[in-house]
Image 1 (tube, one colour):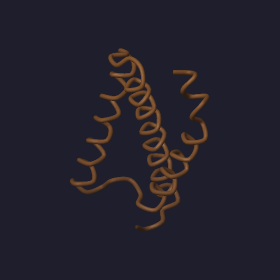
Image 2 (cartoon, one colour; image 1 turned 180 degrees about the vertical axis):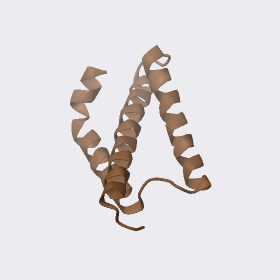
Image 3 (cartoon, one colour; image 1 turned 135 degrees about the horizontal axis):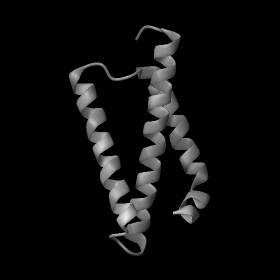
Image 4 (cartoon, helix red, strand yellow; image 1 turned 45 degrees about the vertical axis):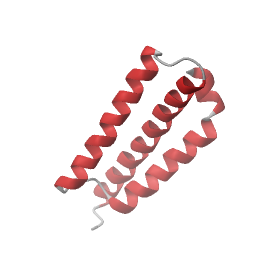
Length: 93
């Protein structure tokens, strides 16, 4: 996983920045549909993380799973930070 992290850091940084921008533009989820979508994304992250931790897939598919878990995690962390920044600045939607 460390090798994947070191080789994909530019893409991870881009996913984090994209998440920050999306989170700052949209804010934290408030409606039922937005909360359900956020829950699905978090469930997907949990599934990918479990698959990557258990090393269920060897070779290239395992690399894709690990990369997907890292990228989705970075994007969701950026969305949460951007949304939190927007709510702390008290800017209306």
